[in-house]
Image (cartoon, rainbow, N blue to C red; front, side):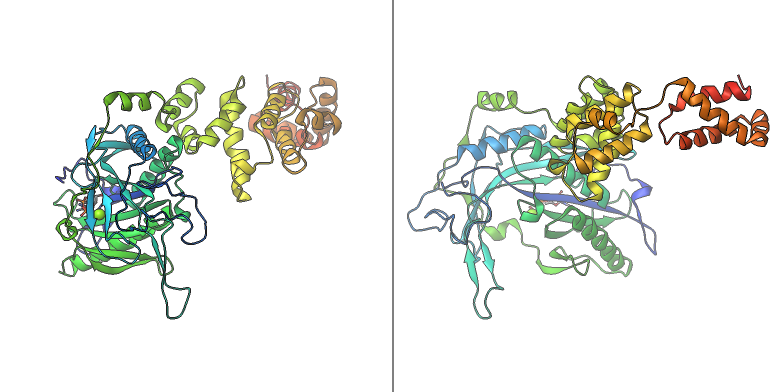
Length: 493
Ligand code: ADP
Ligand code: MG
């Protein structure tokens, strides 16, 4: 591929070396398992967690004479993913054989797409803290997954499990447009969000349904691209970041020492936090790619694509824009909410007919904060959208103060129940009755005559009085009423 550098070097991202600054260049190859009940070229099931070799058809085991038949659902999923990345969809693509030997590859080749992939160039937008970055996607192609070799089950034997053999993968290849570990992590997070919104891959890296190969090189800022190393199969977003940081420093050390980088395939050792050499990099010609004679070129009409495009769900970038424009949320809050479709939906349910900013605040700070603390998923939240909504209604109506609302949230979280009924039963209502507040105000003022004198000079001290009154009322006095009353009594207005 011809590489065009689309980025302006940014000193904030440079690595400081002994001889000067270095810029990291990263490109990612992500393997995403297609969500589909059956495999790419056979009717065998793709269900996860079955006993070894339960999901194997004669095609997956490469029995002589078995022929592959394309699964149309996988084609649809690849096109939908391409559309989700605003990519070019190729109405004609070709399946090739990529030849290599491995015990978990009974065919002796992997059916993949080489010169003519189903999806061409696209892009993925990253919202970094102080800039928006567009990362180019080079291509997306369909290919078969291999089986799995098991070496640690027996002291002298290895086993092969073909359940994964023939499962459809989308390989999504980025351009070398990423310039830091943070960007690489944001890219993977965004890609996973898009895949999950579309329902084309579940994005579970810990189950291996999304795997990343990370290509890393370093160069002097803005200079010629350096030789890259490819770190294979990194299985969490955090590890991707660690692998890049380690690998870039390793390369800088070699170059500053007058050495050169060997283009090679490396592995990330998560325990040691290091990458180490696995093999020298193979070239495309090593694989003897050629069009698979068992398969016709894959062809479909533009109408087929248009039909899929029409039924795409709202994607994260559009949802974010809508949250900012329609609800008045900050870009930062909108970002947090749209990462998972479920959190965006939850927020919209809470915000419906309410103060959306207040709703976002409660969903993000109170609810997500609490879920994080307990290591829980939104799906396991003991507080429902309806309950959170009614807490917000109670604040808005002035029935409870913001402070009491937090106590109420705590009660609903641990005990459940209807928030309005809890407020009623436990006497948590805010005191707006001016007579009752005035009595407390008078008492506090009477007990602190010298502070009252000081407050006449330093109006900031009113805040201290508000605090005292709130404490005396156990948080139930209406703080605004307290504030106004205090100012009047001290003689500040
Ligand atoms: P291959 O198919 O041999 O792995 P590609 O040219 O398709 O090679 O590139 C694979 C990945 O490597 C892509 O994600 C690309 O962006 C990335 N890449 C290419 N050149 C560099 C480089 N100099 N530094 C970092 N990444 C690179
Ligand atoms: Mg590669």
